[in-house]
Amino acid sequence: MNNITGVLLTGGKSSRYKTDKAFARYYNEPFYQKAIQLIKPLTDHIYVVKRLEQQITVESAKISVITDIDQYKGAGPLAGIYSAMQKATSEWFLVLPVDTPLMKESILSEIIKCRSIDCEAVIPRVNDQLQPLVGLYHARAMQVIQQQLKTNKRSMHQLLAKLAVKYVDFPSEEGVFFANINTEEDYKRYLKD
Image (cartoon, rainbow, N blue to C red; front, top):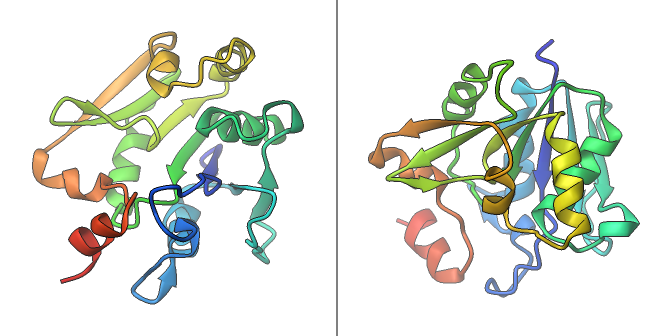
C-alpha cells in the first residue's frame, strides 16, 4: 500500500487539561477514536502509543495499542515515536498527537505527497511555526531519535536540527487545523460554538 505506519501519540500527561485529553470528546467521539479514523485510510497499520494506565482498547487487525519501551518510558513524544518505529518495518511513519481533533485528512495527504527519498522528515509549517508532532518521519530517523533519547535531548526541534527535513508551508487560515487542545479554555475556544 503506502508503506506508511501511523503513530498516534496519546500518552501525554494532560497536566493542563483537567482530565485525560485522549478521552475528551468532539462531536461525541473521543479524541483518540477521531484521530484513528483520520489516519486509518492513509496508513497500512497504526500504533496507538499510550501510558500504561490509560484504558485505550481498540479491536482491529490494523491497529496495535502499545506503551513506550521500558528504557524510555515517559520520555515524551520522541519515546512514543521510537517505540512505534521499533515495532514496524515501514519506510515512513505518520505521526499525529491525540490533541489535534480539528486536523483534516487533506493536510495529512499533502504532507505525505511531499515525501522524497532525500529527506528524513516532512514537517508542516504555518506562519513560520513548525508543527513537528504532525509529521512524516522516515525509518532512517530512528537512529537519530534513539541518540537523542540516550542523551536526554527530548526536544522535537533538536531532533529536526539533525535530520534532512522538507518543510511544507500551509496558509495561515489553515492554522486552526493544527490547534492543540491543551486546556479547557482551548477546548471552549476551538470546539464550542
